[in-house]
Image (cartoon, rainbow, N blue to C red):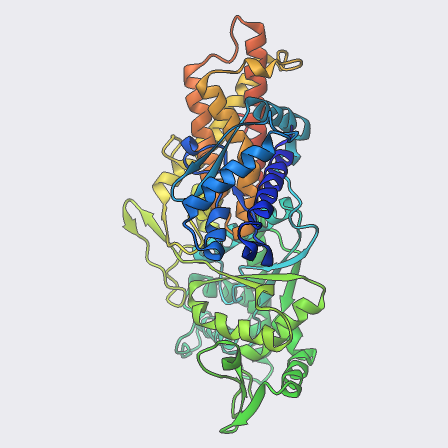
Length: 559
């Protein structure tokens, strides 16, 4: 019996029990009680559990443990007449109110067969039902190369997009290019100052200009192509320097992301948005809904009506727009393209910006829940135990390109996703380069390579016709059950929009496999047992490969 069918049947049993409970407590029937099935973190607490007793507790007015005990009896009675009675070994209540289920070995053996049949598709679920999601991430200003701060956003965003697609969503990846405004003007001024410097002309470097070596590189290339054509200060030079600098940096950004195995479906220009007239249209739309007003010569958005701590200026007294104005238009544009849900991945410095953009989409008639904003904390690089300083303006930073060149794409991507997005990440460069079990990505990849070596040695000859029910050793059962958890991990990562859980799972799966391998010979004198164990390790290889692929990390056949 397949896992999903078992879970659905258990949920149905619980729902029947809740319906029966409503006869004693009528208030239960007045609202829908969601039934959530989870895999307990502690293996001693069963294979599946539900916290539905906690949800019922508030309605009924009894302790969760008391409700769980009642549900246990009711579910047990319904189970006697259910088609899945042989799939469940036992049901127990655990304080403070969980109902835990132990499944029969047959459920897990069937999971192995399912893995072998579906291979690269194992773990796919359809909770998304093809719902359209626009995931916007990285979106770094084109004023310099991508740094490790952008790299973490890139790794997390691309991994999350892969996982959501695996969950049945239709996902589009978008990069929003902030290609206008003061920062772009400063970039142009910085490049021109270096161009004049290289041409032996005196120049004043702009205050707060960009001092990185990349500015010299752009200026050198410009001088190489155009000689001394732009020495004289004429009106058109600003636009030219801006366009040349922008093109150079965006070319590098796109190349670096491609080399990092991060792909985008669309690159959306803020300049193009401004020229389209959409900003003015959306402001007028908000005006018709009475969400904007004039004060002190400026135009204000009534964001406090949607929970913001104060109203926000969208057009200043000098007639220029604040950042909020084009962002309002941009988010409306996203919805107008038919997306059901928007996900933005931003840096931690955008924390205060979240309430106002949430207010804006509500003012335009959308639900607050239609937009999810993930704030990814910064990363600190450590080299030989000491933090590496970072300052984009001063030109003291480690670029994505430099990082990948030092530790490799696989290690960089895995390390950036290892922690929750809202947790600061300490990135140990020395650890990322080690070829040892202490390096988590190496440890997982080595498990995959080790299995490939075993299968190559066996030439897969023992796998067909394997008798899986002879796998009875504790390490074998542990490994089978861990493979069974894969779909749960995928669903959890998709639900919480957190890819780090997949990293943790793969490390634990590799550990569980190595523990099995260290205690048991895979290929031995017992042909039937060898077949079964080869089947098991091949299924482990498939799940490791599927998980690594979702993280954008390679699954090597040898190391």
